[in-house]
Amino acid sequence: MENTFEEIILIEDSEIDVFINTKVIELMQITDRVVSLPSGEAALEYLSNTQKTFNKSYLIFLDIRMPKMDGFEFLESFQALPEKIKQKIRIVMLSSTIDTIDLEKANANPFVLAFIPKPLTRDKIANLQLM
Image (cartoon, rainbow, N blue to C red; front, side):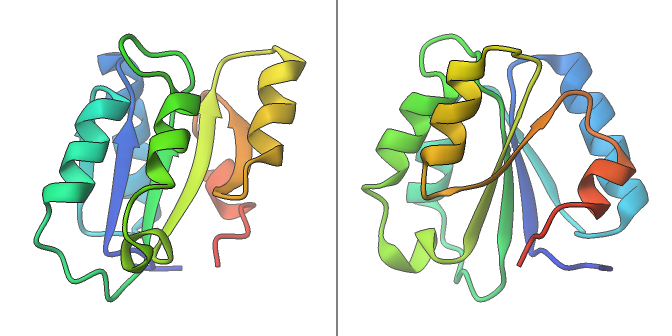
Protein backbone atom coordinates (compact mmCIF):
# COMPACT_ATOMS: atom_id res chain seq x y z
CA MET A 1 0.00 0.00 0.00
CA GLU A 2 3.08 2.22 0.08
CA ASN A 3 2.65 5.52 -1.82
CA THR A 4 -0.68 4.45 -3.23
CA PHE A 5 -1.86 8.05 -3.64
CA GLU A 6 -0.36 11.09 -5.32
CA GLU A 7 -1.89 13.18 -2.57
CA ILE A 8 -4.26 12.84 0.37
CA ILE A 9 -6.49 15.81 1.06
CA LEU A 10 -7.99 16.34 4.51
CA ILE A 11 -11.08 18.51 4.38
CA GLU A 12 -11.41 19.23 8.07
CA ASP A 13 -11.92 22.34 10.19
CA SER A 14 -10.53 20.90 13.46
CA GLU A 15 -6.79 21.49 13.82
CA ILE A 16 -6.54 18.64 16.33
CA ASP A 17 -8.17 16.19 13.91
CA VAL A 18 -5.91 17.42 11.09
CA PHE A 19 -2.84 16.81 13.27
CA ILE A 20 -3.93 13.30 14.28
CA ASN A 21 -5.03 12.31 10.77
CA THR A 22 -1.82 13.60 9.22
CA LYS A 23 0.31 11.58 11.65
CA VAL A 24 -1.69 8.39 10.99
CA ILE A 25 -1.41 8.87 7.22
CA GLU A 26 2.34 9.51 7.47
CA LEU A 27 2.78 6.30 9.49
CA MET A 28 0.91 4.36 6.80
CA GLN A 29 3.23 5.66 4.05
CA ILE A 30 0.45 5.72 1.46
CA THR A 31 1.39 9.15 0.08
CA ASP A 32 4.23 11.64 0.12
CA ARG A 33 1.91 14.63 0.33
CA VAL A 34 -0.92 15.45 2.76
CA VAL A 35 -2.85 18.67 2.14
CA SER A 36 -5.16 20.09 4.79
CA LEU A 37 -8.03 22.36 3.80
CA PRO A 38 -10.39 23.89 6.40
CA SER A 39 -13.62 23.82 4.37
CA GLY A 40 -15.42 22.38 1.41
CA GLU A 41 -15.13 25.74 -0.34
CA ALA A 42 -11.35 25.76 0.06
CA ALA A 43 -11.17 22.19 -1.26
CA LEU A 44 -13.25 22.96 -4.35
CA GLU A 45 -11.09 25.98 -5.08
CA TYR A 46 -7.93 23.89 -4.59
CA LEU A 47 -9.16 21.13 -6.92
CA SER A 48 -10.46 23.55 -9.55
CA ASN A 49 -7.40 25.80 -9.65
CA THR A 50 -4.76 23.13 -9.43
CA GLN A 51 -2.32 22.49 -12.25
CA LYS A 52 -2.14 18.80 -11.38
CA THR A 53 -2.21 16.20 -14.12
CA PHE A 54 -4.30 13.75 -12.07
CA ASN A 55 -2.35 10.78 -13.41
CA LYS A 56 -2.39 8.98 -10.08
CA SER A 57 -5.23 8.55 -7.59
CA TYR A 58 -6.05 11.08 -4.90
CA LEU A 59 -7.81 10.35 -1.63
CA ILE A 60 -10.00 12.81 0.24
CA PHE A 61 -10.98 12.37 3.87
CA LEU A 62 -14.07 14.56 4.16
CA ASP A 63 -15.59 15.77 7.42
CA ILE A 64 -19.35 16.32 7.50
CA ARG A 65 -19.78 19.11 10.03
CA MET A 66 -17.90 22.22 8.95
CA PRO A 67 -18.80 25.92 8.84
CA LYS A 68 -19.79 27.62 5.59
CA MET A 69 -19.98 24.46 3.44
CA ASP A 70 -20.49 21.07 5.04
CA GLY A 71 -19.36 17.74 3.61
CA PHE A 72 -22.63 17.05 1.80
CA GLU A 73 -22.62 20.49 0.19
CA PHE A 74 -19.05 19.79 -0.93
CA LEU A 75 -20.23 16.53 -2.54
CA GLU A 76 -22.99 18.36 -4.42
CA SER A 77 -20.49 20.88 -5.82
CA PHE A 78 -17.91 18.14 -6.48
CA GLN A 79 -20.25 16.77 -9.18
CA ALA A 80 -19.55 19.84 -11.33
CA LEU A 81 -15.78 19.26 -11.46
CA PRO A 82 -14.30 17.97 -14.72
CA GLU A 83 -14.51 14.22 -15.27
CA LYS A 84 -10.70 13.87 -15.44
CA ILE A 85 -10.54 15.10 -11.84
CA LYS A 86 -13.51 13.16 -10.46
CA GLN A 87 -12.34 9.82 -11.86
CA LYS A 88 -8.99 10.06 -10.03
CA ILE A 89 -10.42 10.98 -6.61
CA ARG A 90 -11.63 8.59 -3.92
CA ILE A 91 -13.67 10.16 -1.10
CA VAL A 92 -14.00 8.74 2.39
CA MET A 93 -16.29 10.53 4.80
CA LEU A 94 -14.68 10.75 8.21
CA SER A 95 -16.97 12.04 10.92
CA SER A 96 -17.85 11.87 14.58
CA THR A 97 -21.56 11.98 13.77
CA ILE A 98 -23.78 9.17 15.00
CA ASP A 99 -26.75 10.41 12.98
CA THR A 100 -28.08 7.50 10.91
CA ILE A 101 -29.46 9.95 8.34
CA ASP A 102 -25.91 11.22 7.71
CA LEU A 103 -24.66 7.66 7.36
CA GLU A 104 -27.43 6.74 4.90
CA LYS A 105 -26.89 9.95 2.92
CA ALA A 106 -23.14 9.27 2.70
CA ASN A 107 -23.61 5.65 1.65
CA ALA A 108 -26.09 6.70 -1.04
CA ASN A 109 -23.67 9.16 -2.64
CA PRO A 110 -21.90 7.65 -5.67
CA PHE A 111 -18.69 9.59 -4.92
CA VAL A 112 -18.34 8.28 -1.36
CA LEU A 113 -16.24 5.15 -1.14
CA ALA A 114 -16.76 4.66 2.59
CA PHE A 115 -17.97 6.28 5.79
CA ILE A 116 -15.78 5.78 8.83
CA PRO A 117 -16.08 7.20 12.34
CA LYS A 118 -13.42 9.45 13.83
CA PRO A 119 -10.69 9.09 14.89
CA LEU A 120 -8.75 7.90 11.87
CA THR A 121 -6.55 4.91 12.68
CA ARG A 122 -4.12 2.69 10.81
CA ASP A 123 -6.61 -0.20 10.99
CA LYS A 124 -9.41 1.89 9.53
CA ILE A 125 -7.22 2.90 6.59
CA ALA A 126 -5.96 -0.66 6.10
CA ASN A 127 -9.54 -1.98 6.01
CA LEU A 128 -10.69 0.44 3.32
CA GLN A 129 -11.13 -0.93 -0.18
CA LEU A 130 -9.40 2.05 -1.76
CA MET A 131 -9.18 1.00 -5.39
